[in-house]
Length: 238
Image (tube, rainbow, N blue to C red; front, side, top):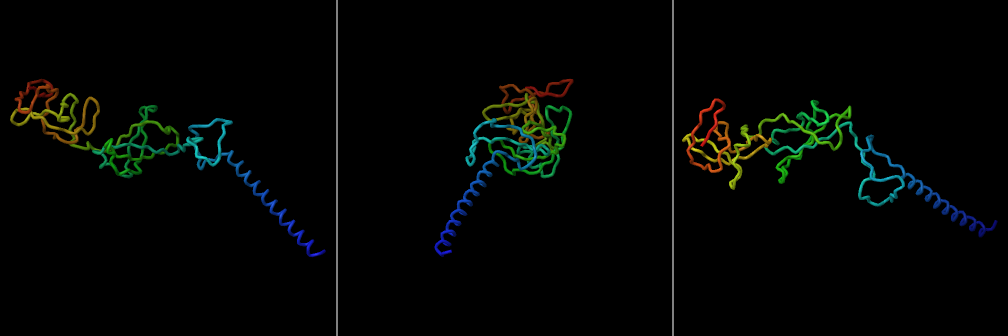
């Protein structure tokens, strides 16, 4: 066999090998694209929402505006709570709290505080904390609203007043108290917690102050006050 014929055969082999390698790479590419037709979650869970339907076109390599599916692992739940600033100093990592949900009245879930944002939101005046709870029976649901009770103190002066004792005006929220001179004095207060029919005072009032319930709008600082006799709890009147 001549050298020229040998070189031609070697060149033909190289060309055909390149064509075979290109075809093999194309097969691997098509196999990879075929793999995109099956989505595998990185963890076991429950599909809570589906944003696409059977037959819909999903283009690979483009950022979708909405996720195709939402999967939730409900074996352990995270609970996010905004704690008022007055109580944030009493919360700590590892403390236990009690969680209740409307669908299970009378049942309390034990939750543990795992982390805190350690920053006060200037708009709401609260600190965001995260709690976690075991959910072996799957009673708790993702996205549900719940109430959490922390084992904390009053978070202020410890004084609680009926809402009817508040005086709201141009100077803010105030209460009328009876001084040692028998005259009324208006004190500006800060409400730590509003429960509707009663409020917890965080600043501006002490437990020894005598507060006038349902004071008239015309009451001013320095007005004389007479304590009316009553068979029930004593109430101050103008």
